[in-house]
Amino acid sequence: MTHDPASLHARHQSVLPSWLSLYYERPLELTHGEGRHVWDAEGNRYLDFFGGILTTMTAHALPEVTKAVAEQAGRIIHTSTLYLSRPMVELAERIAALSGIPDARVFFTTSGTEANDAALLLATTYRRSNQVLAMRNSYHGRSFSTVGITGNQSWSPTSLSPLQTLYVHGGVRSRGPYAGLSDDAYTEACVADLEDVLQQTAGGVAALIAEPVQGVGGFTMPPDGLYAAFREVLARHGILWISDEVQTGWGRTGDHFWGWQAHADNGPPDMLTFAKGIGNGMSIGGVVARAEVMDSLSANSISTFGGSPVTMAAGLANLGYLLEHDLQGNARRVGGLLIERLRAVAAGLDLVREVRGRGLMIGIELVRPGTDERSPEAASLVLEAARERGLLIGKGGQGGASLRIAPPMTLTIAEAEEGADLLADALRAAQGQLAPA
Image 1 (cartoon, rainbow, N blue to C red):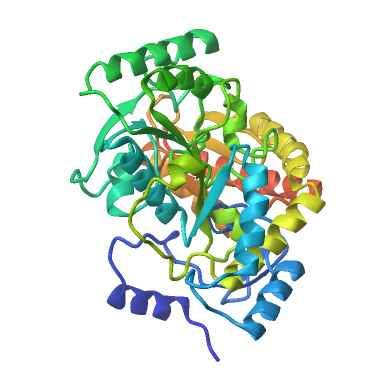
Image 2: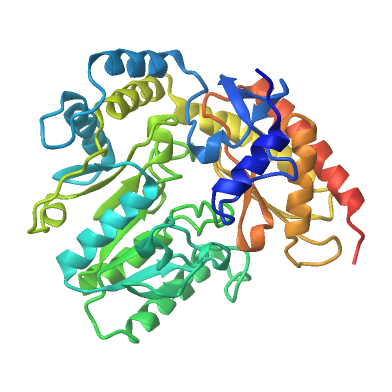
């Protein structure tokens, strides 16, 4: 059987939406993977530093996960939530215990978008309000409701929404009106902004939804403790806090198991949402909430595919592997080494404005050399140059000017050093192609 990526690309264009994004001038067809590597249809091997958008969390073809999937599929693939499911109950028990939320209940979905959508339904029902606070530069999914709370122009196809959304400062530390302040002064200014925004509402705001580290936004984050300071204000008004952990959960940031734990001084969130990495590629998402909030829906509901026996089996095996092998600790150690290597590389390059992140969640913001102007052109050049050298990375941020680096959490020190060298070469090559201002 011959594999012709150009022919497949033409077929893709003829039958799939024009807005379905593809990376690269010559899009890749990935055919198989193992560990931290993947191969394309032409036989080229790549070090994977993006993990299918932070989704292959542990490793490609992890034996424990593939075995669990195969064994469960051999018994029964689908039942729906109308029947008791042992794998679903077992995974819910583990996640509830890990969540830090008291009296927690877990509802499974098939994606992060659907998880955030469910959290918004719960919050607006519980609070009897369609007003939602979201962060500037945020991204929470591609459904009608989650697009309505996305504060990133590149990913907002419509202004129409069932929600009234108010955007507050705080998710982007190094740009905007408060960028020059110290961390404490920055937090104080953002809290004052939140208080001011609440003066613009009719009262009864349902929730604040926030990513502890903004994913599509380019791996930007506030100083530790900002959301704890917000929590004081929210609690006074009875407003719920939803922590979107779709990209930050399961120890990827290294320092914490959940991103909200960097902001824990005033307790856990009322809800957290999760997806991506827990299934290691299988479609799992979900919401964890206090029972009082989760049980506020008065109508009946089911989930046809949420909590599927096969995906739950995968999630249990994957989570067990992650905990038994301390992948959070590995993310902290290897991610710390990787970010320092990348900062050393960036110090000598005019197109790099900032290297940021924590653990194995690293962003590199690129600018036109000689300016502070974001450069999506530079990001595209580096993406292509990295691919040519055998490295896959992502991009995002405002205008698509930031590189996103999020390898599987089993990444070794040798692979981190290899990836840093390949990315350094790609950055230098891109800088050589960009004329200074």
